[in-house]
Each structure stands twice: as structure tokens, then as C-alpha cells.
Image 1 (cartoon, rainbow, N blue to C red):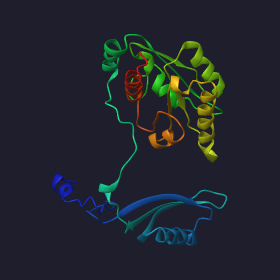
Image 2 (image 1 turned 60 degrees about the horizontal axis):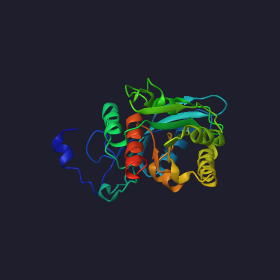
Image 3 (image 1 turned 90 degrees about the vertical axis):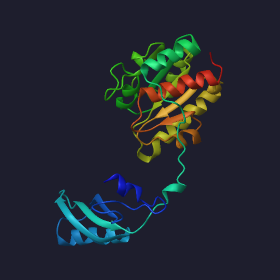
Length: 254
């Protein structure tokens, strides 16, 4: 898309873009519990129309066995979004890179910062907490273990909230990081809420910076559950570190 085309976009009436501006073209992928065939494709198109798509077209379908069919459907969306009215609750912090974080600690905190993290409850996934904490990090973004002035303690997966809190107490943690990947039946909400309740019962909630993260986590959700910040997809160690370090200074936890 050219800069001229972008300049002509009406941000009060934004529609999906396919081949031409405002054509509304969308691609959907989904599975229906019906056997593969013409009737299945018609069912997919009917569903797409009910979703508000005009001229739905099944461009691909595949028999998934046992009476299930997978579809890829194109269609034209008639709805628009007023982009100018959108307000998103997000972490507001100047993101520093790894070296800048180290210098910030030297200049403003003047001691090592202790951060303890884990995938808690029954969550056995470590990819999220490892990406933030492990030295190698993820996608070219080094983890907190490589940050000068930060003592990062990664406790791994399936760590009970009580155990994570005890570790935080033992090492005098400035911040606790909770990673949640499994979200079926909102189990992450229950576990995150339990963490806050336990910290409050221990009289620790106001003494630590509490951060959660995961693919279904937003800053808004985190704050609703009693956390100081929430980080979702496409955030890295520098985002978490910048927030924690800034909070330490802002709260006078030096």
C-alpha cells in the first residue's frame, strides 16, 4: 500500500483491506463438526453470511476425519471501526534496552535488583518465563539473567503460588513474575487471583512489584486482578525490566 493510499484512509470508518481500499475482504479459518462435502461448504458460507460477510467463498476445505471439516473462507465485511475512539489500557513506560537498564540501576537504584519468576499452578509451560528470564532470551532479546544489576531467579514450571511467595520472601525479591500459558476454562484467572490473595494474606502485596504475562494476558486484565502490570505477546525482557526498574524508583524501594 502506498503512502498516498494510507493518507486517504478514513480512520473513523476503518474496514478490512484486501486488494483495494475499503473492499472489506477478510479470510477466515475454522472447523465445523460436519462431514466433508458440498453440504459442509454451504454450511460454512451460511455461517459466514450470519457473521456479516457478503459474497462468502469457500476457497479451501479438508476432511479432518470423524465427521469434521476444516475451511478457509473469503468474504467481504460490511462493518467498520472508528479507530479514533479506541483507548487501550497498556503499560506506559519508556522502554530501555539491556545496557540502558544496567546503567539505570547504577545511576538510580545503586544495588542489585532481585526478580523471582515462575509458571505457577498446574501450568507446565516454560517458554514464556524462559523467554523473559533465561540468559539466551528469545528472538534476539536477551533474558533478565544477562542484565547487569539484576539477579533473576527462574523457578520453572508447575510452581505452587505458596512456594513462589516463600522464595520471594527468602531472597528479598523486588518483583515477582507469574507466567500463565494454559487458559482453558479460565484456570489462569483463578490462579492469578489466588496469588494476589496469598500475598495480601502474607502482608506482602504492597512490598513487591507483581507482574504477570502470557498469550491471553493484557495490562487491563492484570490490573483488574490486582497486579501492577501485565505483558502479552510480543513483549520481551526489556519491557518487563524497564517497568520493574522504573517502579522501584517511583515507589522509593531503593
